[in-house]
Image 1 (cartoon, rainbow, N blue to C red):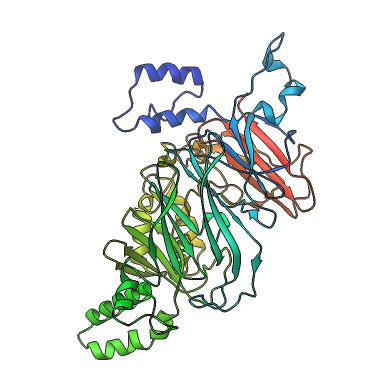
Image 2: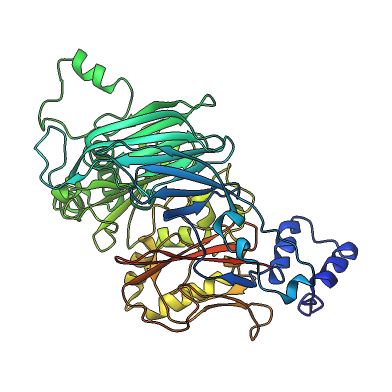
Length: 507
């Protein structure tokens, strides 16, 4: 009860901290409660800033990553705090004109060219390795839907002439290494086609159904340490050639597909006492459907296990293949075996996802702030949102499929900002979210309401101009929140119109 009636005065809470010690293991959560008082209280609308595409803050808060409008250059800023002086009481004055500039909040460190004349930076793709302050970026040529028939390529998957991944040291902009894929297709949207875990990166080639596992060395080099697809072990191909069984055309199924079929066969065989009849109904009848499954998305569970999504080949190569039948497999890279397999309507998998959500996106090298992203296991308020989604679903099966659509987890896709902490603030997730996505613009400010005091609006974020309600049709907004400063950017984009950037900060 004492905690419920905590003072709303910041100075009073600082004094209370001197006398009251938090419970063991609860220090960070206790400190984060201070953000109830440390909120963005002032907004500069339409700040004078370069016409760049601002991507995100790094999870340690040291850098703001941006790209040029022609998708050729990478620009990196360092956040700085606004400072200015007044002859009188500063709070009674508007900000001076020279303070309402972008360079009052961010210092440009450098601008480097990543893409060549016929390549473009994928502005949706960016992964950050905090321990070395390395950034992984991607460039590509134009996508071609009329791809030529190539041995080993999946029919119907488009082709990109060249995709290049660059490892950049963000401290000084040095390009340390690069890895190119030619006449391939990798889903770069929102970094879906790659996943970073410690010093390992897995990249999924959709066109050739291959998982490339790269290691980022301390020296800054990208080294391919494993390739999973047609072959699962390093010497599989050598073994086949040495025995005069070289794979030609479609003589052999890919190694990963063989592992999948073997697991389904054994699981079906052990389910019923009448194996022959059960195999005929459950395995042989659907055999071609299993053969036609392709790898859509992959993530690391740990250094030895991959979580792989298999889907229908008829699923379109878009940002979402959620409506198609899908299977999820846990694959052990050391033993090359599939450990478990679930359908996307599996309630058992949903139960694991609900109770062990943090294990699906845990990374030992995540920043301290990212470890406190709200989820069902670590927040008593997250289940309320799940119940709301479940109540709107037409059936339990549809609800499970909708929740499983987010798996495998997209790497570094959520903001660790405390203003998205569901134990501190409530907000309309239809309008704003910790997930890195563009959303439709709203005419009204987005309210952040105190969980402790449900009737108190702590602060508001209003995208767009300061001219009041306006036509929001055709407008999209995105938000970039600093991981721990009371600082945010709201970015409004309109077709054929200049981007409007607002800066929200504590004055």
